[in-house]
Length: 615
Image 1: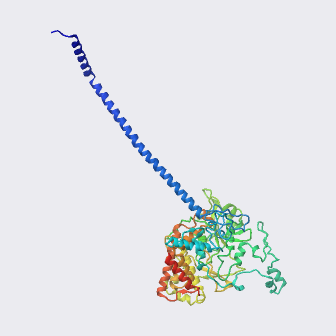
Image 2: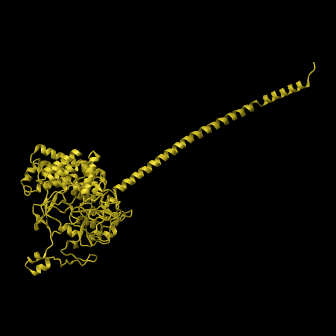
Image 3: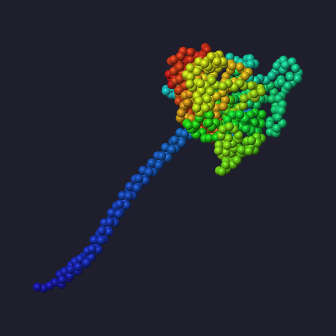
């Protein structure tokens, strides 16, 4: 059979291909695997890119929405700031001028004081006219339009709660505009109703002696001449014209039988402003007392009592520490003045906070060698001193700057004792100041019956005055009220001076019910005091809110709040306790209310009841 050449060739080629496939089989499988793996990797990359693309877009969208939300919040915040604050430039032309003080934080000791915010209004543009009265704490004459605005707002709000600041009106302003803080009083016309006064020509002639006339009388044409030859004091140029008097002298001349100062007196703003800004000429240690305090002299011949910062505002007194071993606090003195004013008492001398330089305003100008010897520099470079006193005057308890700046409280001094003698009274509810013994009132529940039969508590207003003081002390947790003072000139028919409040506001987590013993045991309270306490318990005038707003006007509020929120909350809690004690008294006794609002009590009682219903 013949064999064709083509067939042989094809067979050979097939055999060759078979052998080649047989020889390269494993290599082809590896390549195929590589191809498959490559395709899988490529598919995975595509999936990752798609996933990351969607995630990235989600992230970008989220960031965009977050940025938009933040911008909206910022815009709303700026709008609210513009609606609630108007920062105006202050005038510094002279020490007697009183710039407005808004709620902005002051950054230096040249900031104006609490009351300076209210006595002097600067020009405002038409755009700011609606808001420029913000945070004015004291009196204003043009209030009718604001009052009407607030009444409309109360109706619109519905729940009766007053907004803190609306169209330049604040809770503090509303409080001081309330009729309970503007009760009518008989005009003081008698000379004996005023602590000090400037003599006139007629008074001088009545002395009957030309020599006495020259020495004692002050007329429009005569002047006080400074007896001080010390360098730095201003030249004295005071006449019988009140406009020539420095603020501290006007404060002294404004003390009456009824109150230490008039809240509506424009001089109050000038006084606190001068305390916060006046050049310090001298600083010496003040004698008496148990802890360190300094007597500060100013170039205008005024003086102030300085208490330094010894611990942080948030430091709470150890519960195991006795009340007579506690530190005195500078912010307690400032806060006590504000609280006393909010209660309508006006019995604490004006106090303002100030940031001073320990080196230039104390160490370099003091003439007190006992004080100057106690200065030293701490290991961290702070300038410190400790002075000489009964408690806490040692290197273990120094007063230190940061490194030179020191927070202090400055209280206006009362008239010299040679001009206006004061009588010191031992409080019937004085504590034993012993670690083991109790006072008589702590052991005898009927102790007040004895007090009521004792002069001067058996006549006039002395007992309810004392209970006013006990309520003030309970609200600020002051257990250190062992004595109180009155001006001798006014006899027993006058107010009590609420002095020395440095140990107040030590604890916020615990209330001390024993401070209320005079109220609990005597069950007696002024009607005006009770009405104001009720008013301060309402949401529209809440004590913590008006206290916060009032303290915000102090220059030291620019450093940090003078009272923590815990202390402010404690005020509301303690106020509720006082009202509960009064209710308990009214359930068990009849003659609880001392009516000092004859002819007005029913009107204000109805108004309070109406406000309670609204609230």
